[in-house]
Length: 120
Image (cartoon, rainbow, N blue to C red):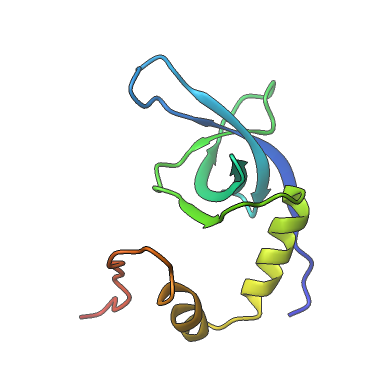
């Protein structure tokens, strides 16, 4: 599975939080059609996004209300390089290895609630 990682630069609109008229813009990279990686104060984050259907804004996406993930802290390298490396590394792992090596050993975490059994 030596498939290259295809990323494109994009912008995400996030909000509103406390004030119904306040939104934030985040520059980052899009993977697939709806996975947006961005850096906020050195923290690499991932959110699900939806494309804004306006011809004037072909690279604009809105938060898809997924809740998001923080993937790494203290990131100092260029985001395209970091995300490409991360995706390539994760592609080489199977689900069980990821669960045992990454999720189980998160520092300062409380219980993570997963629902992995689809037919109960």
